[in-house]
Structures are given as structure tokens and as C-alpha cells.
Length: 214
Image (cartoon, rainbow, N blue to C red; front, side, top):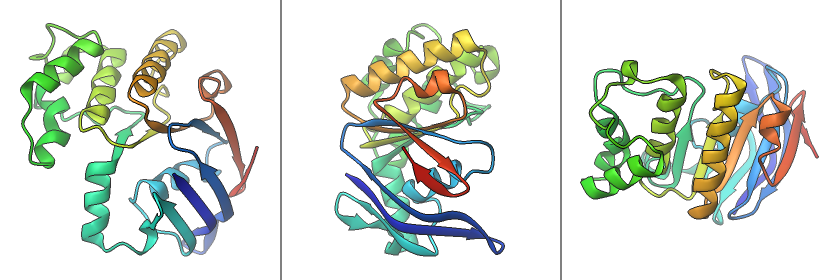
């Protein structure tokens, strides 16, 4: 489903990714492990269409997204990708329900029943009218997971999703990610530096000095 071919990425003359070759199958859950600055978040940004490589190709479902126009990349991100971030990235001035609804609204849909179903799935029934500041960190990340899945994207990109949580809450969040993505047959790429988090995946890929190995 996803294929990276000889991908190189530079920032200010510094080579962050050095000839990356990687194949990820549809429905596979992989963890990308590496220390800070190893290039793992850059890898996610390229697959998510938030950045482009200097060299090589990022191929998703047979299409080289590296050569998409900006408009086509925006549509790709909006329809095909679900993002989960370390710091939740919820909009602070709108409710749980409204945060989860955002991807649907951006895609021109307004399915209230679908949002309520997703809230039930993440065990936050009764909290749909709460604001992010009224929730614990774990609850906020549950909202972020629901938001990432609500528009039924093919690919979930999770960048250190447990990095702001204690280890027990982190395990609960990972169990939820694993359960929901398996149920919905999503392709998941998770970036982490924690080995106990990486072990939730089907496969672990390591990145060091911009080079991938298994």
C-alpha cells in the first residue's frame, strides 16, 4: 500500500533521510523507533503529505504523492490520512463533539450519529459537551484518536501518541489504538522512542542517522 523508494530529505543542507526504502502492506501496524533527531517524524510527514522529499518517491496505492499539486495533497491528507499527535492538538474553544466532527465537516459531511458512535467507542459517553481543558490527558488523547478515525481514512499516522502520558495511561491508549484500527482494518504507522509502545505493532522498523533497518 505504501512504498518509499530511495527517499532523501534535507533541512538546511543537513540530510535527515538518507536513501530510505520501505514497504508497508495494507492493514499493517508498524512502529518506527529512533532517537530524537533520527528522522522518524520526517518520515511520517512525507507519508502524510505534509512535506516532500528532495529525491525519491513516496508511493501510496500506486500513486506517487511526491509529485501531487498542493491542492491534490490537501485532498489526500483530508480524505486518506488520520493524524494522532503527542500533544493532542485539540481545538481548545470547542467541545469534544465538535473536535471529533472536524474532519467530517472539512469533507462536507455532518453525520451526528457517527460522531456519537465514535464517542461511545472511546468510552467518553456523556462528555461530548465538555471542553478539552475539562478532560484528563488520556481522555484528550482518546478524543484525538476518535477525530483521526471519524472520516474513515485508510492510513493512521501517530507521532509519539503516548509521549505526554504516564506509562499506565499510555498502555491504555495503545490498546485502544490497536483495538480500533484492527476492527476498522487501518494501516497504522506509529513513531515512538519507547520500546514497550513499539511492541504493540505487527512490525518494528528502526531508523538511525536517516537510514531504516529492521
